[in-house]
Length: 353
Image (cartoon, rainbow, N blue to C red; front, side, top):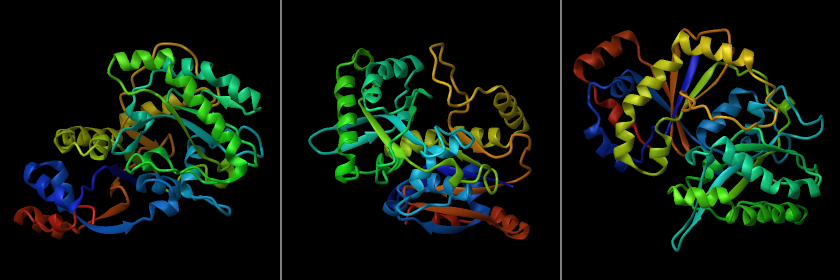
């Protein structure tokens, strides 16, 4: 069985009450809620350092933490389980983000909201790679929106993920230990070099957010997690950006696309294409290379599980900013009665509590 986690699917209670009136009652989204009963999980974001959907992914990989590590620290290792920089260092990600400061707040926008091209990423990498070389820190431009970095074992501290911090007012989340001061200064130098970089000048002219801040997190070694998940799962992020930005009109407009993405991840065609792509894939630690950017038609889907199997059934989870609701299917008799009576019981639990 495949588990499907839908992020951005639990609005605040006052918003949910208004949205219920706008969602067509015969929509697939409503029917799914009517045919399940919920089990709610409240998560402590400070304790885990990541969003509920990120926590779930790490949990499914049977993470074995050591002292001081949080679930956030294991996320970069999920994508690079068979690769490692060496036998001693964990995997850290340097994510390319935007930090926006105004008179009222400081906000972080994660990389997937920034539409970063391969060429932009490489240009920013070339501008700062010498800073890391001087510190004898290995830096690999591995993806348009994030790079892999090897930190000295002296680095101490657990840093929250950009996705989690994008929901919050951004304060000082950096470990304050003196031994991390030189690395913090290094990342400040990166910010200064990027500030007036041609890439960001062009982005401003195009009305796009600047790529002005690297965000570092990770540290778990791949051997601390299981290579394959306990069960196959897909994370569908179709609604997340509208949810984070509280753009509820856009959120409603995206519900048909959400259903299309669910149908995609349940299709044999998707899994066959995924298996073929994996068979052709290069070593993930190969450096990013110039070339035409290819649009990812399934960018809103993260799937982890065996590449050869097509899951025969699905179970759903709804994720908010600090909660997960696992949907347990009702019996056939209960579903039939609920459909006939157009049951409204789901309206009492569908929200962030």
